[in-house]
Image 1: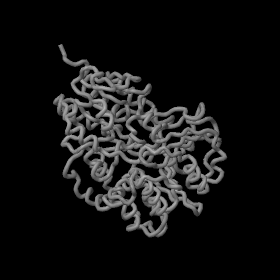
Image 2: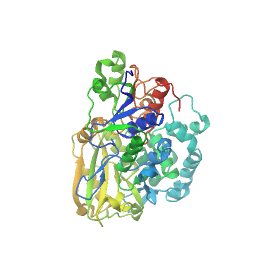
Image 3: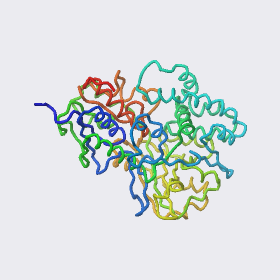
Image 4: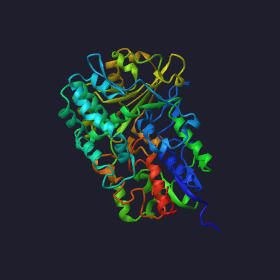
Length: 479
């Protein structure tokens, strides 16, 4: 008689948990996926947050890494009505002079909007675009040393290891290019004066140029539903409304993969983890949180800069100095009067998400970890600054502070949507330094969340690589 009910149990049905379950099921093993909420998706869900007929993405909304993910690209997602929607320009960044700088799919076209910095931008980005396949392999491939493509990584690393603010000052002379670059770097959710934040700016820019930043027609939930449907087609099982508070609650299995961060693993596994490992997990660092608003509008945002109507994603922060100071203030525990705001306006390009002639907006700013401060007024003032009359178009709001984000998704500790700080050290040693970072000292117990390499983002690769580690170590199977 078998000593286990399933070959594998996966806890948490976010993109990484779904990816882990699919990978194991593809290898022919029996898999149970348990999810605490009533729907799958984790950070990839949609709902009518404001008014009936207005479909908002609750967490993630724009998917550059999703479209680039080698794991997602290996799946027949088109069979499940997954349709990527791309705006003409991936990004617009409005300025106080009434214009906006745009990040275009074409490197040369982007440079054309940067004035005297056009040549500098092309010199920085064009060689990296040419090395895209190699860089993608290194950054979203399995953790390994030394790099498989040392020359490509050396070229990238000379710029990427620097602070975003420092690299922008070094390479660019004018405001437009500097503001564009630090806005990209601000996705790191760290002070832009910290080493390695340039890497986030470079990678996001490269993704925009090579594959574009896309949204999902009909909402982000479509991706989660497609992954779940594919898992079921492979014979996997999914149980929702099934929170896990202890490993003892799980049915017997050869392996257990946890799509959770270190804080939850400590709570769920408890004393089954060795004391030394528990101490190391307890030192894992979480970063700033996000304060998010979702808006229903009776018309599109009335941007001053016409370029803003070409992009689904808008960076709102004004000048280079303003963005750097805003992110520094958050990193030091403060709340900037003029926060850097990341805004998505999906209904300009996907009208299925709102009633006719109506629109939705998704926007957030960074705040200190666990902050209770209401940033609604400051976010809306920033948008109004570049779109006079914007507030007159608001007909409903939904607001989520860091505590609300964590209550909705327990992986968002203190509102940290990246599963922990992604600085130079912790990005490569998350959650702790181990030869196989997905494994734990408990045989058959693995982590597969964004707290493992390659880190935050909707790409499924943390789950994919964790499942591959389990297949190799426990099932002696290689894929």
